[in-house]
Amino acid sequence: MYTRLLKSCDRMHPRAWDFIQLMRLDKPIGIYLLLWPTLWALWVAADGVPSAKNLFIFVAGVILMRAAGCVINDYADRDFDGHVKRTQARPLASGKVQPREALLLFCLLVAASFVLVLLTNAATIWLSFGGLALAATYPFMKRYTFYPQVVLGAAFSWGMPMAFTAETGSVPPEAWLLYIANLLWTVAYDTYYAMADRDDDLKIGVKSTAILFGDADRLIIATLQGLALVCLLLAGARFELGVYFHLGLLVAAGCFAWEYQKTRNRKPMACFNAFLHNHWAGLAIFIGLVLDYALRT
Image 1: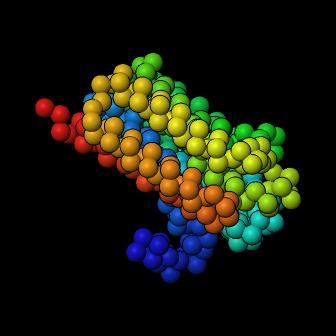
Image 2 (image 1 turned 60 degrees about the vertical axis):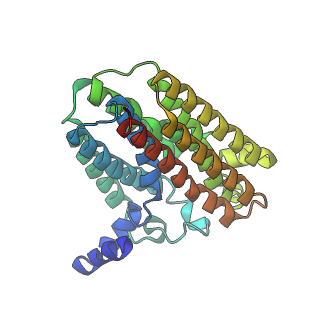
Image 3 (image 1 turned 30 degrees about the horizontal axis):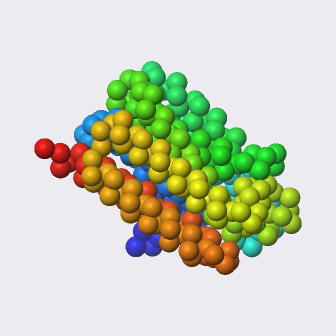
């Protein structure tokens, strides 16, 4: 239904679907993976009762910045995507959208996001510049380093300290446990994503953790996921979170175990499905947090 609604925009404007695809609004998995950890931080920062204003700002900001990240990513990869089977039909790679149009759209999305940030406070506004720098530079990292997933993890986690400053005006030291947990988790699931494209990336000379890790990829992913859970456990202790939060972590651990099992043959589609499956782990942790705060006596 969501996809049909978006496609209906194409009837209103003949090129609308091209720009929807460029922003990846037809594939909301990236929104989910960015949204859940941002909401973890917002709920913890607000002791389970975030303001309606901040909830709107961060949900809308996630959608806008994820779209902006996809646009600048495709702009950076416009000469590579045509050589990768999974991405060769993307609007920039196929010529349906011109590079200057993509850059203009990126600027508009960033500007809209900044308007939202202006509704918060000075600390959050200053932090937003760091988030923009990470989002803009990540797509180019795969040319120079085998760790673009680490930069993505830093970018995908940047909304977490911003959530704390928006709600409380500062970032307590224990909040960085949440940040580190999400960074580790992002590197793990984006390595699954990179494993799906590893053969094509090797041919065109693009770097990734999937290439760097080699045959140890699944073991390292499992280790990163385990370390992320440890950081979340430590954060839970510092923020005095209870049983429902820990049940959410248990469900997430089950998701990680399922992914490890399903990728044992390293087939590209299995790796891609493991990447998609991480949405459920993030959602489980968020539900655990919501219940933990809502059902406290």
